[in-house]
Length: 476
Length: 106
Image 1 (cartoon, rainbow over the protein chains, first blue to last red):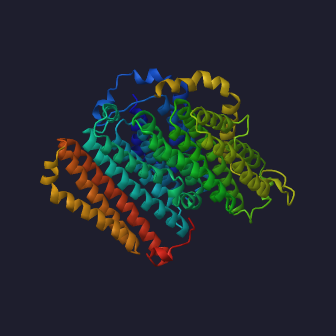
Image 2: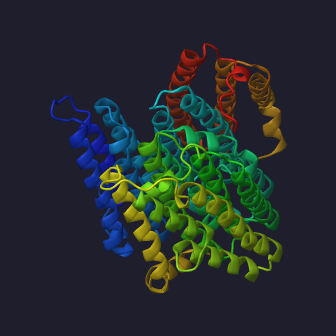
Image 3: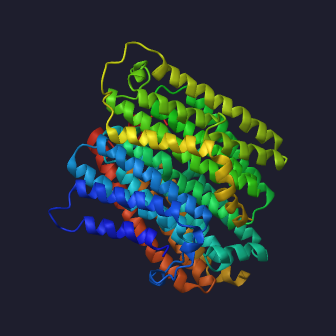
């Protein structure tokens, strides 16, 4: 039954493109809203074991095997939420009928790709679905055809192709070393300790590819351009979920439960994580465009996740998963805020919209929630995940990295408060009475995401017992 | 995997390495977006040959065959999208020289 997560979006995509007159953007929009919210609700309601115990009738026609575990469940939920938000934002920012129909189709392709990426159980299928997602996103980024968007797309495309070359070469070495590509066989090859030089070489190449896909600091050149020049709805999708699934999730899955690593790889990953945290936080100060600042902040937060994955203890992986979820939620929230500002004032340049943010009450309150959560201020969700990561680092005797991670939170708070003061807190003129001109879809997304951020933060002790500790048993 | 394998496939391996070098050279040296794409294409071809070789050595020809066929399809899809992007870049900037395409700062 797990295969339905892949098949239903795919069938919907086919149905929408049948040559009937009544299949317009409006119907496509509502069908997709139903699909995305169904996915989120199913994940919330069903327990894990109810899903995995179904007889997999449909699955036998596939050449790849699927697996489902609590990690995949959290990913599916995150994907559903962010894709839904992106769709709602697109409804008010993409105005042409034809373009919005294309947007929905490509969004369905991306959803299929991401769901499959989360569920597959061998490296080559993983690569295939990562690539499907990436292709859909390339076209989405270029959907608004201006020269900046095209250039950002080209950068992402070429770097992503290099990442593909690295990953494919490493797949060839995995075939040489293990003879098979399924996760279990590779894990067995690591346990059997045979061909260890080839395996390490393959891991090294795979890491190079993944670092490009994650956009961590030495390979971050494409991230700010891609995030800031894409259409607002697309940058929500891209920053919120796509780079995380195609980069971070793959890293998390492979390095927590498939590969068995030696210390030097742990140190390398942690070093890359720390460099990203500090460098991107410092670079964020110099940005004068909100979307670029958010992009750098995104690199910096991804650094925390990479750092925790590199640490590798079960607690650290738990922190990484939590921070993944929280970051996807609050970064989408901040990008939705940027979309609202862009929709209202036609620009995201801070020098142009200084002080105008106070005209948008919902946006200014929710952006405050988002940025405090990013910086890790106590009752909000970002605090708990950062806390777990830092505790895990101290437990693993990594005191230097722990302190750097702790102090870099202050940098995050600093550049976000700078942005908040510039845009929302200075009052240049009194707000006009009545409606503030932000479309309902965007307001709904802002409130939904802020509610999740606050809810996860306040309810964390309850969620910890009922949901999150289940995760720990699975990771070894 | 024994030393005889390398003896047997010596020319095959040398050819793969040459392809890799020419692909990297093509990407690094040329100031032309289309040539950069061609360079990446050569690199992917080299990897495809490497996968075939790996499958043959490990006696997993069927697996390698499935992978290579899928790979070719994916590669074509990406190349089509990339070609479209280059075409639009040319339409706006009237050039495909990446040195003159620096609207963004990175």
